[in-house]
Length: 529
Ligand SMILES: [Zn+2]
Image (cartoon, rainbow, N blue to C red):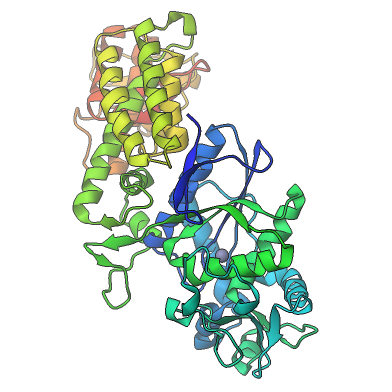
């Protein structure tokens, strides 16, 4: 089964095939960096991350472009309000966006063009559209696109041609406008004092000014895909709110310029996210950002789990119950991962045929789900219907699991990335530790290179920590380190029953201890422990 995607352009699910396989050009409209991106924005970026990852797992070489809008109505207004330059205003928000992206484990795009760095191509595009007679100068000095000169206008948003209002007296200069305002839109805005004040004005042959928001994406996309030798994108994606006017205007400008029937062959749009049943808005006071979640200590695995639990074309409601359920699901997956990682053999020959069968069965169903227009909820269900119960059964039965089953899990990790982050603490204990312990006493003294800093008090006495860890996470980690060190000394003393007992004690409190070949100890915090 090959990948099939819903194309907004044709309103149907179509088999996806790029222009020049195995390469895929993917353009996704990025954030406007006048403020922090909210979770609704990130829902779109995560759906695009899923698309990108699935294309890559499917063998495509994706060239992913995501622009940063650093000049538009909103960035200029925000900079003006604070009395700073445009650059000074947007820079921290660009940095914040990358931090949030990393927190949410979104794969970095290959190019992050900023509008202000592509003013040259934007001027060239506007000049070309003027030459072709599809653009004109308005009496306000701005350059407008004449939608009446582009018969295909409205094809993406399916606007009725009668709704279009063409002509010099019917035009719109705002970056964002409603469907009722389907009229000539601005390509280049004549400079106003506010633009000059924040450093958002450039000289152009047709007058000093700045680009309109829609023009920015067309110019940057066309400039960057030139390196692939094409002028049509394979996929263009964004939120549903961008269909009109943003994407409609992008198509008009780009196709009028290239003369091609398409600007992108596939247009994909992600639905909105509601919060506690209502649309996110300033008025509702229910806008929150990725960093709010991070500050609350919410693992990105749970956020991804929640967002992928609803198909990208369906509205999603973010609420506390959904987040709690997603966290529980994510933690269950983490436990399974830790169990599997601890048990999986490296030798494929040693793997039980049953384990290979489960892995293959899972891979097929998982791939079918994602190939079916990125049906992530179905892919998630398959994990809980096949991989988790069958995998756990094999582990319970102490069957030999190996690379096939581990590979099935890796596929989940690679595509959905929804398990909690694994934390590993390495404790250095050299193999040549010399014990000077008195095993009869409650304390253990030891010296030589093997002394483990964490476990010994100042006078070189290794005291036994309590059997139960303290409740705080820092104290718990210290506790686990100390027990792991004691276990190491017990092993050196060849007191294996006690070493095993300590391993069990640590495991019962959510820590997995593993011995590395170099003599160090890997201490791994298990999910949910
Ligand atoms: Zn765009």
